[in-house]
Amino acid sequence: MSKWLAALPVYNEEHYVDDVLREVSKYAENILVIDDGSSDGTAERLAAWKDVHVERHPQNTGYGSALQTAFRYAIEQEYEYLITLDCDGQHQPKRLPQFLEACEGADIVSGSRYLKRYEGDSEPPTQRLKINRQITQQLNETLQLNLTDAFCGFKAYRVEALKRLDIKDNGYAMPLEVWVQAAMRGLRVIEIPVPLIYLDLSRSFGGALDESEKRLQYYNQCIASSIAVMEQRGFSLPTNQAFSQG
Image (cartoon, rainbow, N blue to C red; front, side, top):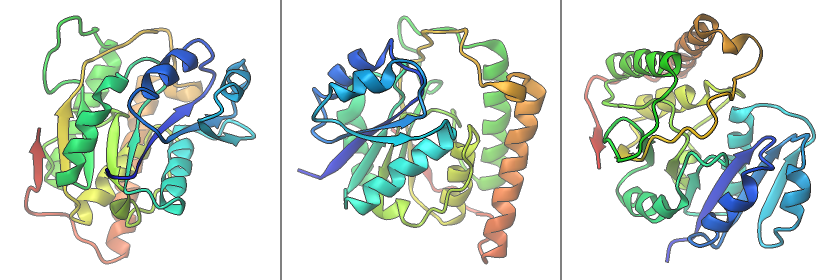
């Protein structure tokens, strides 16, 4: 059996964390929660989970920062695979075995909410869907990828591949930095379908990022700067497509 870790970034998830961890623990023996400075009752709830390892950020540093903590922990603890999923009920833990199986043939396995329609799928917020499509198309054209969902947080990584990534973005653009580095380093990536679930349409990105144009600008800047950094390191934009869908 491969040694693998399930990691969940959380921020003020007191209403979801117990139910989600209860489900995750059915499939994963090794669970990491990154509490990104929660100010509600999340920390108290996590304290009751004695078999769950918690890394707590003293203050909220961002989604990307929480995932960087997960990456470092998986590498330091010498796991073979890392699977990340959100703790807000959007991702179904019962799909963890599918991600683990798919990761045997790839460096990164990414869930896609738009690869297949499931009965009962939610309707995504209009602006989020629009921006997702724009950014996904841009990544595909620039990096010779064949993505259908650039932002899904349900992912599996081969930890040896994680060692080749140098992620710096602390915010919601962090997945875009992953795609740029993965493509320009020639990592093997696979997309597999997952249901589209939105349980709380009132959730926001916070601050200026709640404005769709500013959010799109932020994403574009991250893509451009990530490509520039890789080119400075001697990597070139890919010319061949090395991507499959499961």
